[in-house]
Picture 1 (cartoon, rainbow, N blue to C red):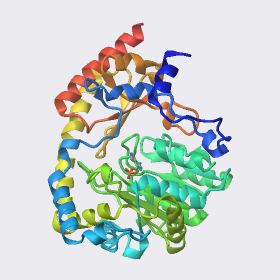
Picture 2: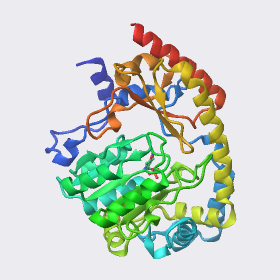
Picture 3: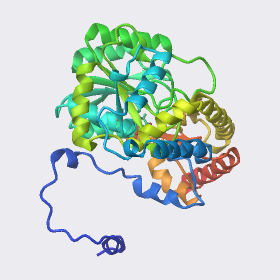
Length: 412
Ligand code: PMP
C-alpha cells in the first residue's frame, strides 16, 4: 500500500463492499489530472490565479445579511418552507424585469430559477441530449460545461474561430456536416479566454441559427462585469436566434457564488421539460436564498454594487496586464479582456503548461493549464489566469513568482 492510499484509507470512515459497475456515463468523464496539483493551492501562501473566485472582500456581506434578516424576520414561514420548482415569484419578476431591460422581452413565466447556472447546464443536458448527440462548443470552452455534456454522453465538437471568437462561416459548415443538437457559447468575457464576440459576429451566428435551425445555449455569468467599451447585445436579442436561444444568468459573479442562484430563460415547452428535470434533481433552489436575493434587488442597488466591483476588477486586470510581459517567456501572447475575470495566455511553441505547473506551484503561485479546456486537440502551450481574486500588489508578487517558476522549470 502506498503512502497516499494509507492516508486516504485513514481519512474515510465508510466501509465498502465491491461496487456495482458504475454507469457508463459516469465512467466516461475522468477527474482532472491537474486537480491534485491545484489542491495544493489551498495553502495560504499560494497566490492563486487558478480558481475562478470572485474577490471575497468585495461581497456586499452587510447588504446580503440585511436581506436574509428581513425575510427571516418578516416571512419566516415562507422563507423556511418548501417552494415551487420554477422559483419564487418575486425573484422571477425581478429577473424578468432585469432581462427585459437589457434585451429580449421576458416575463416571470419565461424564467426558471436554478441552483447556480451550472445546474441549468446539467438540466439542459438531461432534457436535450441523447448519448451520441453532437454539441458544438467554442475552442477553448468552459470546463464544467464540457463535463455536463460529457456526462450526458454527448459528442462535443469545437467550432473553429480566431481572436474574436467563433467563425460564423465555419459554424454553418459544421451545422450542415454534424447536425448538432445545440451550440453552447459564452460570448461575453468568456471563461476561459476573457474574449467577447463582436456584435457583427453575433448577428451572423444568429442568422446561421435561424437559417439552419440551430439551437443556442448562451451562457452569460460575466456580462455585467464590463470595465470599458460598449455593451454588446445578447445573441438571444437578434432576429433568427430569438426563438431558439436559451439564455443563462447567474448571481455568482455579481452578488456571491455561495448563494447558488442562477436562472434560465427559455421557450415554454423547453422550460417545462427543464422544470420536470429540476424536480428530480433538487425539488427547488433554496427558498431563503431566493427570497433574500429578491429582497436585495428590491431594497438595494445591485447595479451600483456591480459598478464598484467592476471598477476594482479593472485595476486588477491592469495590474496583471502590466506584469505579464516580464513574467511570461518572450514570444508569449495573451488576451486583453474588457471585463470579466479571466485572461488567456499562450506561451511559445514547445512549452507545456501542464508539465510546468508543479514547478510553478513550488514557487507558491498557480494557474490552470489550458489543455483541459479543449474539446478536441489540446493546445498545451496555453493557460488561464484569474485576475480578480488578489489585490494589485499580490498580483504583482504572484507574477514575479510565476516568472521565476517558469524560468526555473524551463532550465531544469
Ligand atoms: N458558466 C460559466 C461560463 C462559468 O464560468 C461558471 C462558473 N465558473 C458557471 C457557468 C457556473 O456558475 P454558477 O453555477 O456559480 O452560476
